[in-house]
Length: 109
Image (cartoon, rainbow, N blue to C red; front, side, top):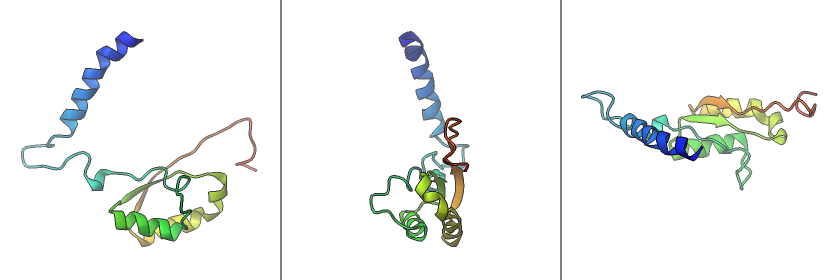
């Protein structure tokens, strides 16, 4: 297993370096510019426990244009408010975190 990591690490690193460079001779956009970033894990790890509107405002103030909705069960009732706030602040919902636990009926009941 360690040998595989040693073999693939330089390849992965090279791909990352190449992908961060210009897409063509006229483009200087980098992979990690703000418009390419997606804010993840904001909802469940927000120590201030912001509302959907406050969260969207914060993301906009920080320059994020894309958001991945990561949540816990207590956040599901405000999901429609989350969507409305994101639209109001021109932030794209890029992903929704989901888990399926076949041993639990808590989410789907």
